[in-house]
Amino acid sequence: MLEPARFPEPLREIAAKVRDGERLSAEDALICLTTPHVLPLGRLAGDVRRRLHGDVAFFNINRHINPTNVCVYTYNCKFCSFAALPGEDHAWEMSHDDVYEHAAKQGGDAVTEFHIVGGLHPDLPMSWYEEMLRGLKERFPSVHLKAFTAIEIGWFAKLEKISIEEVLIRLRDAGLGSLPGGGAEIFHPEVREIICDGKLDADEWVEVHRIAHGLGIRSNATMLYGHVEKPEHKVDHLIRLRDLQDDTGGFNAFIPLAYHPENNYLGLKHHTTGTQDLQHIATSRLVLDNIPHVKAYWIMISPKLAQVALSFGADDIDGTVVEETIYHMAGASTEQHIQRADLERIVREAGFRPVERDTLYNPVTAPVAAPA
Ligand code: V47
Image (cartoon, rainbow, N blue to C red; front, side, top):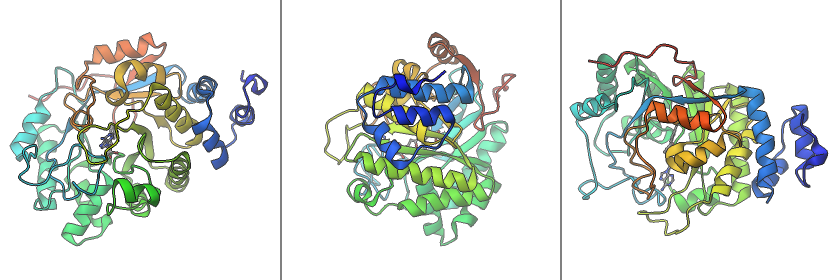
């Protein structure tokens, strides 16, 4: 039982709200993000997480595929270490066959999700991506295709001169199952101007997800922290996401993403600390009372910290991944692949019960057959 009186100020009032199931205000969110009392904050978020999910911690068997890193916003998105201009040494463009070959490399586990994102390629028409989705569905019919950030969806609309709705309908017809949460960064224009000037703005990002939800396409949401943003910017970000979720109910999960500073144009040196990472996980769980899942992405914060995060509000540690480029090009030193047995062990040793889920958080009961 939560006893607010045992919490230090200024968390006491927040503890009372958590105990009573009351929504936190923007002012409360600011307190969560700035309090030095991270352990008590984690205790509150852990309590909410246990109310929602008991002792279950989710993981999935997934595979990341990045068909190209060629991106017209290479200079705009100063925080991104993944993108390249056409012809640069580190630029790549996969063929459809390359994509299928990557998809088939599963590292021995029966995959249920392909997570597919890439740069905004100036010359690849949307039909190239539709064909890729169809080709994947033909070869891997049971695998869910979670593909394209809101930024890519906006780019397709611009390139093809069609509406967001039409883009989403065409991609869904080709096999798209849901949208990942990338591209949100920090919504506030003061930050967007510095880190990703000219990219889709907050209203546009929100609109893509709103339209997707209206079409029955579920999605995730992210927030990139640990660079030039201030706590107030993150409060604004979280409240905007919560408002959208109140309207649509279409978000599955929220993933706070820790900024990695290497090999990009932003010119910052510092990595986030473990305490900061846990504080963002805990705050997300407490503020986003209407988003069912909070993910501690092990690739980003390490399997060791992801274990701790499960007691600070997270209920999901993402999946096997197999090959990761976005964080590893930005200096991540974690592995790129983890086996199912290791994910289960990480969860179990943190005191939780591992449950394999599919992308939409249905438990996977029988292993899905690997494609021939
Ligand atoms: O949008 C880019 C971020 C995101 C850097 O939906 C960086 O299940 C840190 O969205 N340092 C893409 N972050 C990753 C993403 C994601 C990851 C895992 C699961 C899901 C999901 C979504 O990565 C980008 C951007 O915010 N990013 N560069 C960097 N240097």
